[in-house]
Image (cartoon, rainbow, N blue to C red; front, side, top):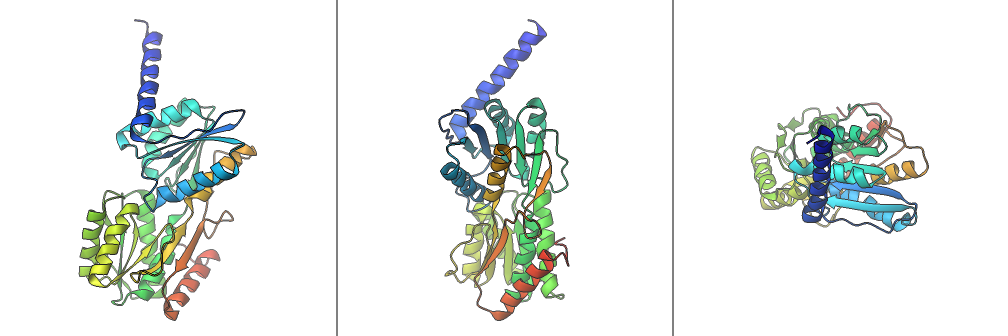
Length: 330
């Protein structure tokens, strides 16, 4: 068989496998075409994770509501890591713009993007120092800024004077967020005892998160910061069990639950909207774009639940220090 024939068969097989993958392991939605911008959004996790993916999905829904006459949307969720590349190939074959959520997809996005030079790619939450490719832009939600605020609130609200951070997968962005959490705690209380961060290897395992939280609370932490998505349920259970506190987010929740000092609000959906609007108005560029307190693109805030004046003061000082550039999160 000729080499070119074998190559064509291989590509066709990959596309068919990816198509089957999207049907089998994730839901897809596509609106009617008609000269619209075709956008595929890749959610490797659950759209109901109360975290990064769900925050991004809220933006997806806003686009569907506001720009349905201009944009044809499709999505996939809960894809195994071993199938990321196939799913991305499928999206790149059918869309003008592909948006991938989460730094865990970075290696696969960087492999697929060069194969489709006429397709625009955006990765949200990848390495902060990643270099864009000719058709690949990086959007940084600067989760570290939000976690600096979380650290400040946790230290001010901790009854024991000790705090700790629990992360999901040990990605660069999560490690930087953990460093920022510790720096935020020391910003308001220089003598704060910041325990060594724990990384679970999974964003969505409540049992692992609860075990880690109980270990931190048992080691003296009075309040925890976190980036664990569905794992928050386990931390909440641990906090309730021992009478300690935590900071929720990235989607603000109910302040009536006394274990919550507050919630970081990191609007990943705003970045999905930014990418789509940039593609629509032809301003899209293969560049690094930052969001957060120190960016004109915004996307970061904090919802305080604690009624303690000292905690409110700590949050205000931390927010001012960050937004004015007086201090860096890490």
